[in-house]
Amino acid sequence: MCHLGFLMTFFFCDSANTLFNIWIKYKPRLPEWYYNEKLLKVGDSLAQIKFHALQERNVCIYQMICSSDRNLQNPESLQTCFNILSSLRLTMQVALPQENLCWLIYNGTILIYTICRHLMMIGQSAKVLEYLLWASICMESSIPLLSVHYLTWRATLYTAVSQCYFDCQASIHGEIFARRGLIKIDELKQLENTSSSMENSETKRVFREATLKMSVMIFKRAVYESRRKPKSFFRPKLRVSLKEAQNLPWPRTATERLLTEMFDGVAAQFLAILEALSDSSRRVLHPAPPVPDEIEIRDVISELFFAGLEILSGEKRVSGDAAVKFIKLAFSYEEWDVFDSAIEFVVNFLQAQDDPTWKKAEMELKLLTLMQPLLFPRKFKLKYEKGLFTLENFETVYVWSVYIHTCFYKYIVFSFQNIQPDKEILVDVLMFLWQRCKTGLQRIQMSGSDYLKYIHKYKAYQVLLYFNVSLNMNAVCYSKRFPRTILFYSV
Image (cartoon, rainbow, N blue to C red; front, top):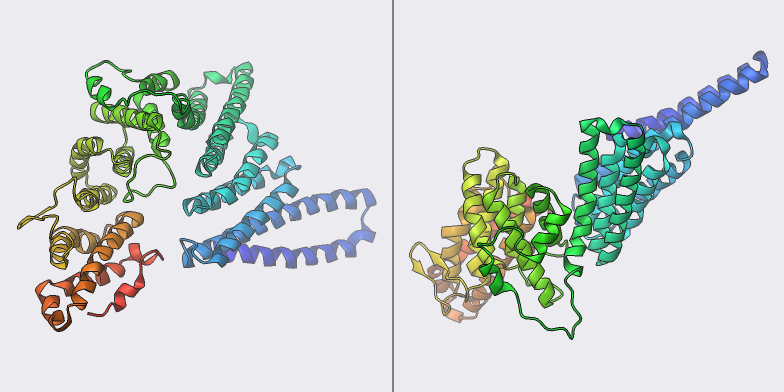
């Protein structure tokens, strides 16, 4: 694929020169009108080949970057990606006025979206916003691309733009753009109604899915903003009343009423819940209360988890991926009652599956369960096979080495030989354990003549061995966040 882009560029340059030499040679032998007509057609064909060659060349460059620097850690890789986006935008700008080049516009939007989504994952949403906006406008400006056939893709671009705004803490603009997308979808729907093609079930499905995507992005902000109160306004928290509402019929809370008003079916409602709780700035193993720390926001988040748990425990129309994401979000927001309630039956479901994808999810949830008492030792009791750890000995190297050996080692090293968990989770686990062990090792080193005795007594060498082995795993090697100096830590 990469060689194709460069070959097409070379072929275009060489063939174009040869072709024009032929045209110049035969111009005196052809009627002028015939010559001009054919020359224009050849020129159009060459222009399409050139645009296509440029696009393929950009694809090639991007794939080469990903193969050598998947996480775009080098500034040069990052800059090259933005150069590719600028090049794509320029070629699309030239091709846009010509309807016969709509396929180039469509392909260009796919390339822009692919690169932008990659950049969004590493925190570059503010910089890619303009390119996603450009891709969306291009889809609207090309008449052939305004058909129902391309509506699903157009809605995907609209959703990406809205998500960028949310990532940039500009939620009001995210909602506004989603409402704009809803208007555009409705305009096309009205046109389809006049042509009587809306009777097609597939067409109805396309409009329903596109509308759902926009509605989810609107709900993502509306569910919070509809509940905000002036700072001087006081009302008690609703956490106690949620327990009282468990036996009431749905909808039981203001959040559930809004879900019922905006979405038909539990699958759509659960999707809206996940999107409303999702925050690109959060990491699963860095749990924290919601920000900003407002009573109303806490109430809404608790109600979202309350509703999600009800759907998850009572319905079979929630996908496994969505259920796992919901549990990870509960961990991230420190919603421990929801986490403990949901993880039991979700893990049971995962254990009954043979697909490696589900085994990966099962391992990730197991790691979260193991990390829970480590992150919150005063709230959860830390247990292992030989007894109960106390807060007094919690920081000793012996405790950590035994806990790693009995709990983490088999998951981090042996269980992941063929199935690798989420890189972010795995790196955060190793970072956390290493920081704890390092403190104990430093204390041992300061013990003077008893240094070697303590090293063997507390099995500190095992701790280093586990981390060194873990560092060689592919899941960790791609991350620059993990300190490679662990490999050279002297014992």
